[in-house]
Length: 455
Image 1 (tube, rainbow, N blue to C red):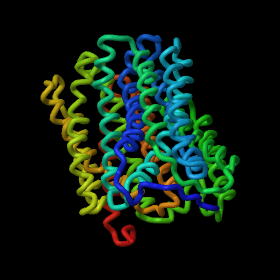
Image 2: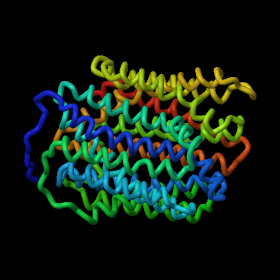
Image 3: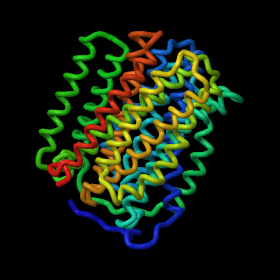
Image 4: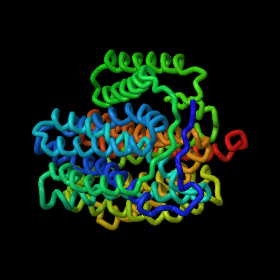
């Protein structure tokens, strides 16, 4: 493997246009996830689909994006992160156009799958691009800004979706991505610098095995959520196990495997990634179930639902700004563990609300959840990226995105399972499940304080 170094900004001042060139497409692709989650009730009603069935619009996205992330991250290391980023933006725009023109649940799910390939390319290389743009001593700040953008974009989706749905039909949630995407493309082509490449062959068979591993894993998870029967579920997971075993055998001893096994030998990297899956499972669960719960169960209108969720992103934005510099002084295990405990408490307080809550009852609880998640996100991302060597930034970047989206996919599947088992009480059960997962994530995060993990 031969590295080709290009002129970089690693030891000069940070280029603001380059930062914007990365963050605008990132915010666009992240916002799309929560826009779709919030609009699911309206989409299901318009297309005549049941609530549990409409979750496939979300599941199709997660299945494809998680399957494609690590192969695309490997392509970024080989051919340059900038090229993969630009290609992803083009595919994302094409998928958005197809989703806006979809006329059935099936065609919408297919369009979301295309869109997911573009989003995977963007997500797979973004942390690596940030590590390239920012000098080493400012990496925490750069990743903190990225965490802020991702968190705020994901959590402001309900508010934006509600505002759009108040004046237009749901297809405009996707069609609006196209003109914004052209603006983002102009920024990217003009300002994003070329990045170093690692001249090595791309193992297509390993990429296929890796994609199949995650696709089959999520397919079985979705089957469990929709109760399609144990033969189907076990068959999918058995095939996933076979693909994973074949992938590990094929990549054994390689210095830069697609499945980044070399990085998981580092305890801090492995535990931070596991904590990330738990935390984002809670976030994904919450932002799928809360719109259903507030709108369908508690009777708030679509626009009121978005406004009631807004305190989460508002406090998240404030806490992300505070947590980023704190991550340079305090352990991510402590910050993340405490934050996830606060998040668990916020979800428990939501589940324990009175039968007829006032807006104030909901607002302060949403704000508490935002505070907790804000303490977790930026320090944990820095822990993942900083624990990997620079030449493996692409692999670490792929794991950052994979753990986030795998967790969100798990959360969405758990909501579908709860709703299909108990349509009447499923929303509240899902919130309690999220509370328990947050506690588990907190324990994982606190384990990073142990000397064996820190070392």
